[in-house]
Length: 141
Image 1 (cartoon, helix red, strand yellow):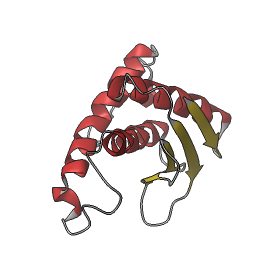
Image 2 (cartoon, rainbow, N blue to C red):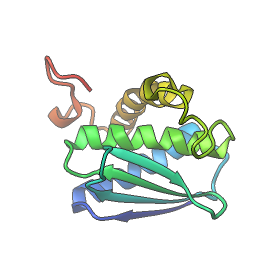
Image 3 (cartoon, helix red, strand yellow):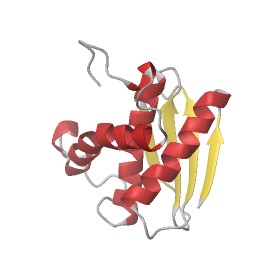
Image 4 (cartoon, rainbow, N blue to C red):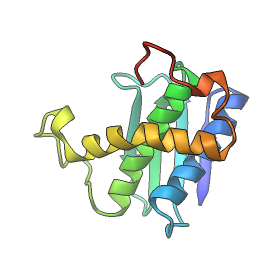
């Protein structure tokens, strides 16, 4: 698997790389020939976005780098669920535009899995005890 991280801080890049690897193994354990580029930037109109490119098994993900690190990684996990959906034929570019965002099956799955993927990644990386990985009282994810 090829993973390319563009932009962001050194710390963000390190964690993003590991999260992409983790999500790919969890969501698509048999897929080893993916090419994923993650742009850590300030996307317009969304905190994250996933595009399936014209090239076979090549994806571009944009994530808002101004989010907290926990939220950035949850957003990345969300977008990696979309990579899985594209790869397994569960989603096609533009196929759900006629459905309200919150009712789209792809979004229901992605929102439902993002926190769990983050928590499992933090546990695997032995980071779950660190304050930045915890949900603060009164804070929503």
